[in-house]
Image (cartoon, rainbow, N blue to C red; front, side, top):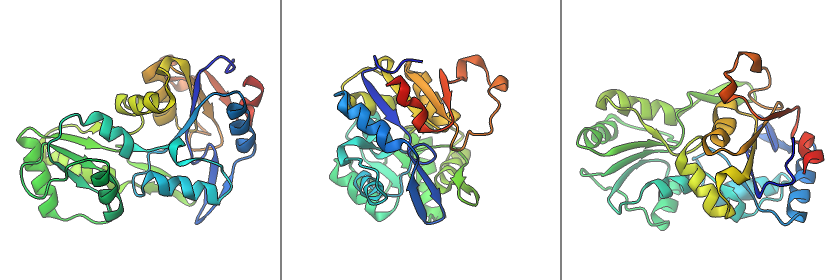
Length: 263
């Protein structure tokens, strides 16, 4: 495996660069060295997390607090990529907390205040009521696009899977409107577009490094990037012999430190 000729790098966070146990987080062995070597080579990097319960700046600040030097401009989330997907200036009904709603409004999204939404975007939600769900489903039935940050039913937690409230919400709207949501986080073309815009390189010239076969590796495969599966996270026990060849990563390492020799 060679990574010395790629033009930019995309990393996942949890399970790849950071390990979380309950409310505590620590930097994975070798993560700082990997980021330092990439920056010393003059190549750009981005960190993409599917988390949508905080603003990107808050995510970046949290990583710096645990010792991972990530700049605000290096942190990407579905709150970025949804903006690349939404090209029309029409009103959007958004399922999210107040911090995220304020961020999206400041970013230029026109938030729907009632009926007539031209798109419905489901991020992380703390609470939802049937009136909101019905309004969203009726908007989708009338032609609005249903978007979701992620449609994975759960993600890894310190004490087992954490069920995704965003996926539950999107599934309820999808069922009522007889449609399938479009993912704008990982893996999606919208995410690839946001990454390419940030790194200034096409997907086929990038390397995507992460612990999730269905998100990180799938994102890289979608864009023709080189992919590295890190075994330190959610996909650690997956038997790749049972995975279709088209979905397998280009390389596998036990931890992110394993890519150092390839840089």
